[in-house]
Image (cartoon, rainbow, N blue to C red; front, top):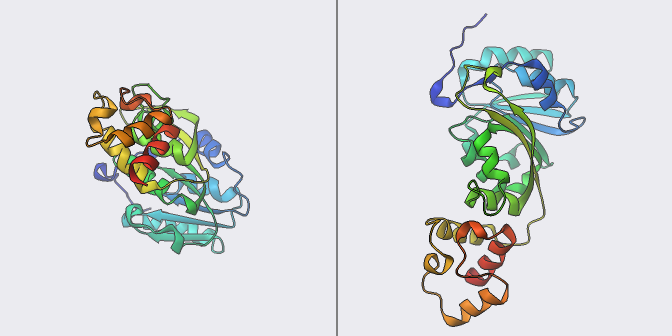
Length: 257
């Protein structure tokens, strides 16, 4: 048996509770679907995903030292299992298939938010994303307007998708044991009727200074632009966390159309 030592630099925390692994594999109906798993580790969740009979399961792993574990799975499932060693940050999902993907992953804590934002930007690749993340990351993704976790990530996610927490997972279910609680969430993309880049540009400007009112964050506004903003029901004396995703879409269209 090959020996493997987890790498803290890659944010490796392996879920070892089989009941939770099975629950994750059943959140979506995977039968005949094109499924991608990011960061399979030794393949604990992979085995449960394959039991759900996907048309193809492609696993993307960065750490080549896990190859012996994953190749054993490939030998058992030669027809519907693909193994790719690649950094998920560099992966172009459109090269895997032209079908909509169900993405499943226990995301490394250190790059989870970056990956999610990248995937949401290219949401046309996905039917659903079932992701395990740090609980605090999950709270940012589905945070309600006006709450302490609400920010740029909340708006970008909710403007492009619906987000629901499915399972909360305590630290005792992992090895090595992390210092935080985790959560499994499902993100389902919704049709986009706005320009993503314009929205993100406005969000970066507005949330750069959370305590300032919008008028102070949005510099160089003229009277015509201010009038248009007021006409669509947005108060320039509001703070960034007071606007909902729909408000920000309207704001981006006014400012950057």
